[in-house]
Image (tube, rainbow, N blue to C red):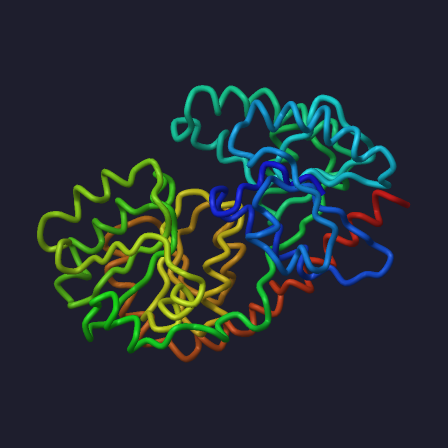
Length: 361
């Protein structure tokens, strides 16, 4: 599996998606070798213990260096492999066949304005070419499958849906709510949590509008967790003035234990994203017993199903959503816990294994 692009902690949900399905692999006939950037094995010791991890000499942060290594170093190393799985959406110019290509989403087509000029040019050139070169393609949702087939004129039978999977013990080490409230000075008020990097498509600006118009005056706190994205400064500027200055907590990156504890303690997990290939925090919230409120964009209705509130991006409708959550909390929590059974690491790994076998038979 080619993960040379997968810089730990820097590539968002795509790292989590692939790492979790690899963890779920449990087939004696499949012996994966992971080709990873320097530092990946240290960040994921559980994978290093179970699988052969071959590190490149580079840390994966330089795209030109990585592209060169894929066409030279990786090409030589994969000479005797039955299958090469490229997990980052592109296939190098010089590559072995057969191949499975994971495409996480086509956000660059839906929102090109959110990409830098060079990055956009690279994706526009490489992704269509890679999709057509691939023996088969893996995607996280039916939504992404349909967009890939339509955008690149790919036959549906070549595209396999491999859903995101979460671990059965998620939340076992979650930090207690009382500790989190004290350490992060959250007070005793109810809060909603939004776990996402501050990228423009994630919807931070929309959520701050909802807070200003509705939730702040109700005594609800918004807790933002996740790394710095391209609109971090815009978010920070809005948090200076009342009422957001006293009702929004920007915590940045937190540990997995703190993340799980915050989600579990929240009144709801809110997810007003304009575009997602999957949206893993929604499933994590369901597993932790927290209702979800999500936008009606891209794949999110498919992922949420009937286990949460799916709303158009209208400030007033979102302003009323917490009343609905309060009235339907028990039913939403129960529906969420049931829906999680469709999104486990075992289910994800089984779908990946079926894709491998289809290619090799």
